[in-house]
Each structure stands twice: as structure tokens, then as C-alpha cells.
Image (cartoon, rainbow, N blue to C red; front, side, top):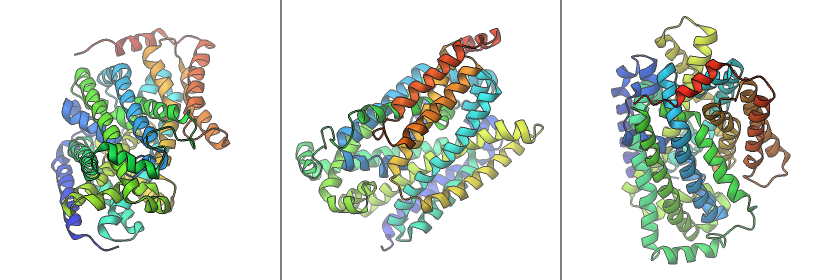
Length: 489
């Protein structure tokens, strides 16, 4: 594969803009923990809404889940992703966003495990911290796989070198600027990602004579394009969107964005914008691009993998400049999600490990420096992991997302809305949900994408049984729950 000069030039220009934003915000990011981890709680609706959308729409959205359209049909990929993401952000705004934003104001904390510690006690907090660091650490691997695939296309280098280059750039710009630079960079990235997915879909529909003729041609290669796939259990059409929804509700790197909003009202408005963007992105984008991939390169997809769907359509229908912007969009997807994850893991380590156990007297700057060291280590190890994994990008991301949702969603909702939930219930909910998900997946007895339908009820049962069979939480905990629902703006 040869180097593509025009596409590379556009991509370099894009990265220069991203790094420029990071450098610009360096001084503000170093001012303290609130500035570095929560962007001084000063992000408005449009920037935050697009930023949250950018965090969710990862490299897997372009090169993983989109491939499900060709592999299983749009009725599974497009509809499930649109339903799960939209429902997840609506529920996040209605049930979680306001209370957690108020919690951040009241306690000056920025992480999900901080909330679990405050609500359920140190055991639940430590367990949450451990799981967040481990799962999100692994979650970066498929992002770098996607970034390497995109960089390989434009650079004409080996997959290994492409993955390393992407990893170096991402880690650098996160370490430089913190949440403020990442949020503003994500705003630019989100607009680019949305435009390149919807734009390519529109071009594909026009190229093949409209939506109807395109679907007809794609259905010849994938008969289940617009129907239930006989190779999938009907329960998979429930499991995937359900898993995505519960993941969004309790996703640590998404929740961390709630703490950057100017107010609860601004945060909810931002999530409404995110839900709308996700709906259009997955319904319209996946329909046009996924169908066109089946028409343009059905043989290539079957032999080299459906993860290449976007690249095949882009290469066939876009000009070199637009291909450069498309590669930038994919890299933007990788950068935004990976940056959000790195900051989340860094905050967990800084607040809940370094300052709590290793150096309680550390200053904010010292704690940030320590977390930056961990983020650098994560970058190195995940690059190594990405070089060795060959599994479908979409499948890996779906598994990790559902595992996290299984562990955290039920205890989080109970902690916010049910005063009777106590420490035992919180720990059992977290541990029970994760263990049930792993057991269901490792057993091999359940249809693909349905493990969440077992794990989430187990987590709910753990919260209920653990709370009802042990003493009530203290009055102080009840007052804490009430404060979460007391408007401050």
C-alpha cells in the first residue's frame, strides 16, 4: 500500500489543529484539579453536547459497529445502535445527570467511584475504582486497533507502525491539556465525525440512485439487510440496545463530562443534543454507508473483515481531500474516546489511589503528575495490546461496554433514587452484575449479545437482596440522597 499524499496532508493539518488546541489550554489545565479534570465546570450546551457525542462515537462506530451492517444487516446494526444510544442518553439526562452534577458541586468530586464511596462506603468505592481502571484500560485497545487501520490506509505503513504512531499522538495531547483541551478538541472532532458519516451516506445514496435502489442492491449481498437475521437470536435485537443503554447510563468517561457542564440545566440540554446526534448518525449514516459497502466490495468484506466497510466506501466515492477528512474523522473518533478514557482513569488514580493511599498530603499538581505517569503507562501497554488482538473491533467494544453496564448501572440508579439502598446492596450489585456477565459470556450457552439480559437482573437482585436483608443506611445517607435532588440552580 502506497502513501497517499493529499489524504496525509489533510490528516496532518487536522492533527496540528488538535495539538494546537491542547497547547493553548495548557496553562489553564495546570491550574488545579477542578480545571484539569472538570474544565472548571464552565462548558456550555453545544460544546458539551457535541463533546459527549464525540466520546461515545469511537473508532468502533466507524470501523466496528458499522461493520455489523454488512455482517448482520441494518435492522440489527443501525436500529440497535440508534435505539440504545438515544435511549441511554435520554435516561442519563432524566435519571442520572442532574443528581450527579449536584453531587460534584456539593463534594467537589469528579469520578463515578467517588460517588459510590460516598453513597455505599469505601468497599464499593474501591471495587468501582479497580473495575473502572481495568475495564477502561482494556477498552482503549480496540480504539487503537481502529486508529491503526485508518493510519495504515493513509500512510501506507505497516499496521504495527500505524498503531504506535496513533498511540503516541493521543497520549501526548491528553497529557498536555487535560479535560478543558479535550472538551474543546472534541467539539471540533464531533462536528467532523458527524459530517463525514452523514456526508458519505448521502453521497452513497445519490450514487446508487436513491435509498430504495441502494437497499435493493445491498439486500442481494445481505438478505437480512432490512429484516431479522436468522443467524442471530431475536433476543440479540433486545440485548445489544439494552446493553448500550445501561453502559451509557453508567459509563465513567461519559459521566465525567456531566461534571464539566455550567449547570444541571445546561447538562441536560447537552445530553438531549447528544441523543439527537446519535439517532441521526446511526440510522442515516449506517444505512447509506453500510449498504454501499455491500454493493461496492462484498468479496473484500467477507475475506478481510467487515470492519473495513467505511474505508471501502470512502475510497470508492470520495475525492482525495474528502478521504483525508474521512480518515481524520476516524482518527478523531479514536482520539476523543481514548482521551476521555485516559482522563477518567487518570482521575480515578489521582483522587482515589494516589491521594488516598500513596501520598495523602500530595498537592493537586503532584497528583496530576502522578496520574499523567499512569496515563503514559496505559498508552504504552494498550499499544502493545492493540498489536496482538485480531478480534472484531465492534465485538470487543460491545463486550467491554456491556460488562461495565452490568456492574454499575443498577447500583448507580439505586444509589440516586432509593434511600434504602445500603453498602451491602451496592457491593453485591457491582460484583454480582460483573460476575454474572462474565459467567454468561464464558459459558458459551447464551446467544451473542444477550449476556446483559441475564447480568443486569442479577445486579438488580444483588442491590435489592443485599439492602433489604441488612440494616438501613444511616440518616446521613438519606439526607445525602435528598441533597442530590435539591436544585441548586
